[in-house]
Image (cartoon, rainbow, N blue to C red; front, side):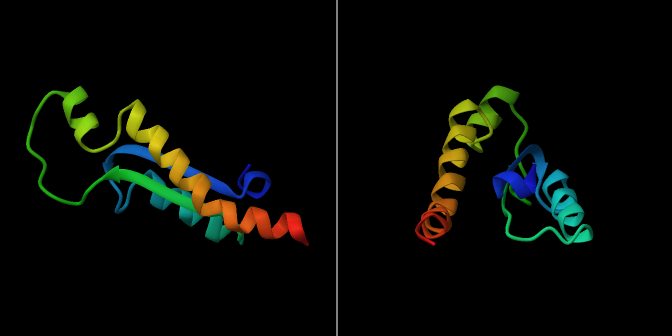
Length: 88
């Protein structure tokens, strides 16, 4: 899938360091898969106050709107490379 799409977005309600996104990067490296843009979206590595899950997800962009924005961001990151490939 990574080779075919050239892009991966990981989303987790945990910190980035040592999380799912890090594991995805390790798998790509272990299999020498290059040319893949990976955007990891997770909680900051910081102290986070307790609260209702829906509010915390909203505040950190881990709700539907926040994830949709990250998808647009990932698409924008890939756009220049995609355009270059189309011109070659």
